[in-house]
Image 1 (cartoon, rainbow, N blue to C red):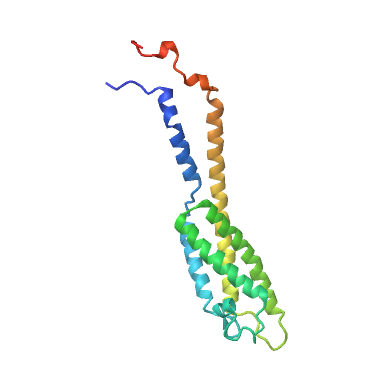
Image 2 (cartoon, rainbow, N blue to C red; image 1 turned 30 degrees about the horizontal axis):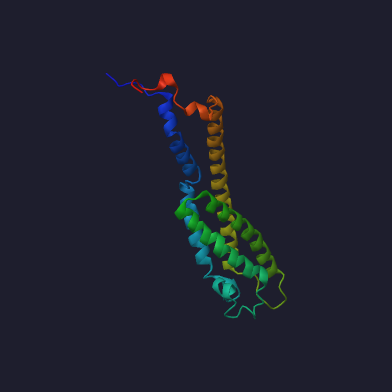
Length: 198
């Protein structure tokens, strides 16, 4: 024999907990296989900072304007790109993978997209440098391509998560619309609802 069947009011008591759990799940991402690709891309991006950015000037030298970056005429677009790649391409990407937060993934996407454009300007500025100065190095090209790959994968992760969030929100709206309207007076015990002896 089974016990009494649960009434709709029993489920109503757990509704707030269920909705809180839905919101928590909706604010997280599940990178799946893309998480491995993003982790590898972050590693490649950090390794590209050790490679020549232009001539003998490495990516780390561009970041801190050291080791001959002035003589090689490293310009502001190159420095801006390297800082954006470090902060958003590496930093926020690792943070998003570790925390699995949707908002951090959005920041990683937005910053990587801006870094992709800055990378284009950095490569262009190295190709149009005055005669006698080195052009773009392998490290610059590799870091730019890696940031573009990161932007692509973060966009796929964030937009896929957006579709799931919209579906969960639509389901919540549908359930709310199907529920009969309630007022404050509905929660007050009616005389026929009171237990005997009161």
